[in-house]
Amino acid sequence: GARTRPSAATRSFSVTPPSRPTPATRAFSAAPPSLTKRYALLYDYCDDVLEKRAPHRAGHVGLIREMHAAGEVFAGGAFDNPVDGAIIVFNTQEAAERFLANDPYATSVVTDAKIREWTTLDF
Image (cartoon, rainbow, N blue to C red; front, side, top):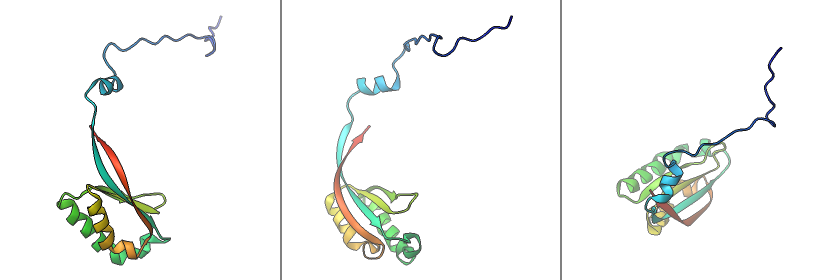
């Protein structure tokens, strides 16, 4: 006759522990990551930001590049799907405040902005 497979409910499975540490185990057994205080500038954008930002984009990106070259910007970018805001992370609160005061987006396509202290883990 034909062989039938046992159903999932009647099959048994065994799990053999790995012989070496898993990545998660290694992470917990290693020295803890260092903590760095940074400052996240959060933007909410207006409707139709992709069309409205065009005349201001070069100044916005230029300011980010200038501050990044000076070591003041850690990372940044727009949120996607939908493009309704952005985050730019600075190494000091003063840099975030200076950027906000000089960013052409702040007076053209940003409807709300706030700076939040953010602690990052440096692995």
